[in-house]
Amino acid sequence: MNFRPKPDGAAAPAESFVFEAGEANFETDVLQASLQTPVLVDFWATWCGPCKTLGPILEKLADEYAGAFRLAKIDCDKEQQLAGMFGVRSIPTVVLIQNGQIADAFTGALPESQVREFLKRHHIEPASRIEAPEQDAGTAEPAPAETPQAAVARLTRALATDPDNTELKLDLALARARTGDTAGAQKTLDALPVDMAEDDRAKALSALLAMQQSLAGIPAAAELLARVERDPRDFAALDGLGVRQLLGGDAADAMQRWLAILASDRNWSEGLARKRLLDAFRIVHDEALVAATRRRMSSLLF
Image (cartoon, rainbow, N blue to C red; front, side, top):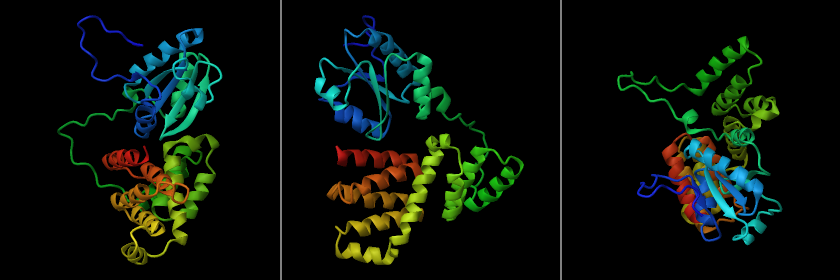
């Protein structure tokens, strides 16, 4: 099925955000791809009236969002096994896949405004809203990065004049966590409204706190290194080194530790290495490093 037939002689678009999915390409183009970009899966059928209403809306938004998500179209009549795996009982059913897992779903032909709200809940916005503004070539050198301690002082002053600002509270919790004040950060996080839990910063903070709290049972780095030298398959030591290195600022080496575990035994400790990597992706701000590590993790898992 061609979703957008082009006029005769027209050049093919540089990139399509809508594609057909089935058993043959589901792992690669949906599960694996969702580690980098969310994939919206539309279960539909040719005879389904509501599908004919919803389908064009989803395709329009896929174009408008320009890569913020990709739309996978699955014909339930042709792909009955996939539909069964997802428990599809009525169509249209739309499933959002992120990081290789089901993040959310809805059924029925929602109006465009509600589909936009559905995407927004998962921080999926049109490309025009998320692109960073271009910097003028003549702009001065950027200011030095603010230290976590300075951020705590600045945000504390700001909250003194605006005590109900939840955005400031979340930023303060993150800054406290980066200074090592785990208890203070956790207390601030716990006091935030429930609807802030889906904020990317709240997820990053939860991941960071989990890493910091796991330090309690991890030996010193020297001991861990000695254990790994004696036995490269000492996964507990590799994991402990990863945690210590990530929190110490060496994200690249930390991720390599967890990738090494995945390469040998992806199911070790109930898939802990994969969970560590997913948390690290939320914490680390080096986009190139995160993207490269995601690709490597994907190649090991699929």
